[in-house]
Amino acid sequence: MNKNNTVTIGGKKYDSVTGLPVASSNPASPKQPTHAAGIHASPQRSQTLVRRVIKKPTGTTKPARKPGQTMDIARSRSISRFAPHPVTAVKEKPATVDIPATKHPLLARTRQAQAAKQAPALTSREVKEQEIAKALATETPKVHKKKFVRRHPRFVTIASISVVVAVAIAYVVYLNMPALSVRVAATQAGINATYPQYQPDGYSLDGPVTYTDGAVSIHFAANTGTSKFDITQAKSSWDSTAVLDNLVKKAVGDSYITSQERGLTIYTYGSGDAAWVNAGILYTIVGDAPLSGDQIRHIATSL
Image (cartoon, rainbow, N blue to C red; front, side, top):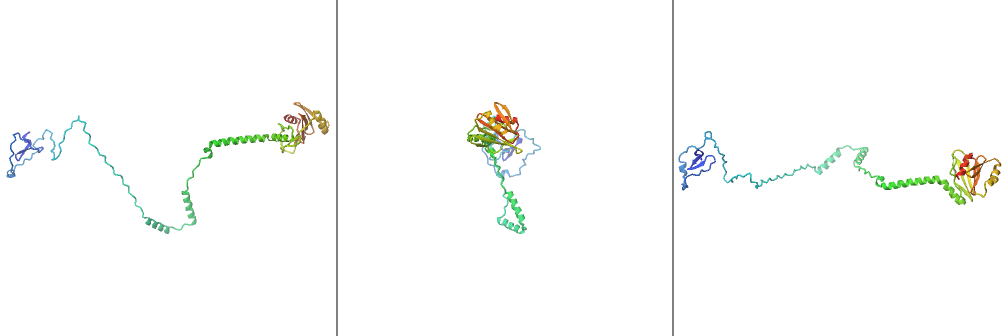
């Protein structure tokens, strides 16, 4: 070590940079006691280094180590078994919530009483309006229930079909009601009476079907006006000649018209009367309705 970098104090050499004692090159010699009186007998010249004159040492020097401080150990980069220093997580303190100040119950009641005394008296109308407003404000919302159709779609479908079928049956029965009435009357009278499938325009069934023993009568009347006619079906053993002699000629003499239609001999006389026989049943049309020959023939062939 360069002598310029050492300082001698009390006979010992110290490094001027680190302040550590410098080992002597001489062999170890017994240490002589040093008296403080000898050291401080006369003022010593200052040994302080002048940094402006002395050059900065080129070598890297380590800072002075404090007493009790452990020595740093240089670690190689190739060593990887050293674990990193654990990092302890800093626990955050829970945030404190400020509780707002609350009024004392006694103070609140006192202020309410004072406000009630100071408030003007309300009229009955104002009180009623306040109560209505409170009721509207606290009204519970209406719960919209599902409609019955959505809850029971199958039942609704079956019910709809049943109604349609019932209406159809009722309509058919209504249309066939005259024929059913004639069948019931024919059963009671004991003959094979039928309802005409054709009826003149402007005429419809008038009243119930009447019957006697061996005869059934069907009554028709005009929809507008007073004209009407009856169709009577009765048991008979006559033929067409007997009908002409015993019924037609007795009624009008020779004032009649004979027509043939589908094997039937039809006698037309008067304003709209007619008579013919078929399968042991005598058919007669009697009334004041002005029926034409074509209408009578259509009635006769539809029975």
